Image (cartoon, rainbow, N blue to C red):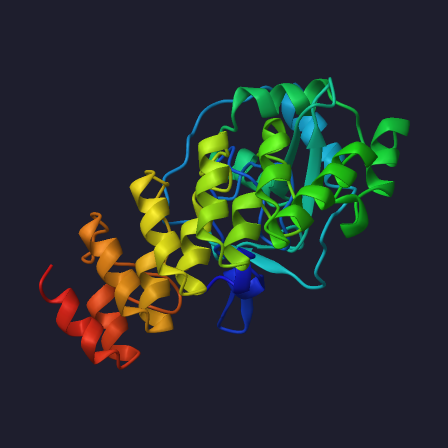
Length: 316
């Protein structure tokens, strides 16, 4: 289940037969939110359940990609199995890499296991990532070392001083319900904060009017693949859930952890469950992984002893 306010923790790395198994999944080119919110696009967070693109990549790309595995980010001690071939054991999976585009405008976040996915499972990343790996600054270069130096929470994981200052100003503006200040800075409505998107800050504050203001100003509801919907459900901010659904936020059901209906059931949030079902969330989707087999919404509700939600689900 996602941690409070949307950050997914290492419960996405599961224990099976005494060994760690990498199961986390994010769609390519969504934005990073595993350990914290970061202005880096996800690449290569695949598993044995969700479909991923396969293809042939150049040896030049593979050789350059290997260079990034020498510098680990967000490293956790231990070894991990590949969920695509659990008989193979590797030390790569419990750390990450960061790749920067040649012009410095884009950053990419990948599990270090990506080199294994590419060479052993024919995973083919997006072309823009391939170009960044080949042409972008490499670990050890001055540019990359400067990025490493700024990779901390105070610098919002590699952002410039200008972005940091604007981010905190707008974050405080939302917390203080300064709608005029937010409106006057509408061009920054998609800026990253330490709490994720500005919409996520408004959700944490329970401010439905501010969420609506941000949407009207052009905030991207799906920068983090619709995680704000899950967060609103988790916070029991059901008026915000209703608003987000009316604005066609992405409903991510790729994993049980990200499925907002599953979050509503675990939370015992009947009203959110009803809203999600009314807006087309499929209660019959079943999940199978190391901890569950053919788990659908009704089965989960029974497990959580949510009797009123069980009655609701049986109507769909």
